Image (cartoon, rainbow, N blue to C red; front, side):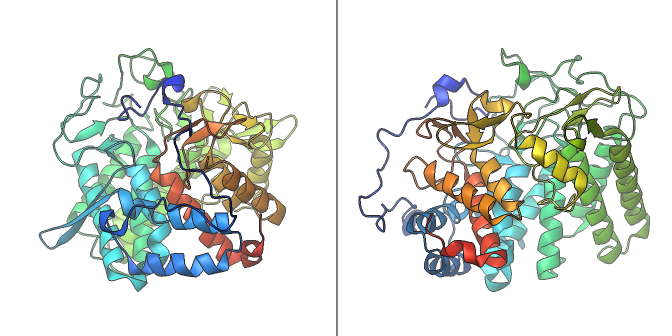
Length: 474
């Protein structure tokens, strides 16, 4: 494929076929070795290997067990670069086929390993290194979504924004900062290791709050703007780089979605709900670790302010589904009623701790988003699920199928998602970004570590909560 560094693409040039890929063995119980050879892996963890061995026994479907063996360790096998920087762990994490570190993706890629870090000191240090690197990234530029490993030369250096040589891309995505808080908070709660919370982390936390305050735009548009010379409309920003016009109301603007596509209405609701969770986590860290009651109060107050704005401006009365969350609003009573496969999205809200699974508004929203009322819900011969404007039409994302299973309390629904995943890896043994709804052999991004590792997290969640499902042969 040409120009794999690009997050955006012309679809016909990036759909891959599997004519030369490995074919499944004739015997059901025999599958080809597709995982990176031991001596070629970027990082090894005894806890991960023990987990793979355990799960291969527990998962009765041989193909599903094979997928877990390949997918769960993929981030460690192929995307991490760990070292010590003085006495501090430092870990750079690429997304896969794009050699840059996204704040969002790097958190999502290592989060599935958090449950194992008390068993493996090496793995614990690696994730502490991700947190330390994310802190450094925020201090370089809180508005950037993706970073080089030090000073580099990005293909997006000519974007119409304040680019720096350390940046791969500078798209303001509210969720990027929230993900860094999520990782640090959960690491701390599991390990009680507060060594990551140094002066730099607090400075980064204060920058997060200041940036989000600026992007409420209560006192002007702020200093961030973005443009790109491109024919791809969602890859640049209307309104002279500030986004479409909004009426400030307490919500936080996010000029881009987690898909890296520009928002239509800049109040992106899943990211604002995520921010409420993050601000409260920051308050707890500030209070308990830093003993900084003043900053803790500031974070808590901000969370409540955004939460109240969500209740007032983001819940729409739908004629068919009742009260639902909009994906985006503008403060002028305009709203976008759809979902996008990238997380945070509306489907993922319980996974992020933003709402309860049985919340009525969430359940109403879920029904809409998993129906043909959502223009990006596709149903075909291969599977059905949510796609994204990022991959145009008729492309279903593995992330959406995995997230549907992870936010479901229905055994039949979960099993159906497992069948879809088993059916649509196109004989590669790995998850992808998206695939054609009628032909899974046509897919994008054969090396997409987030989807792979999240698949592993889903299987471990099923083992913990619904182990009887792993006894099924799909």
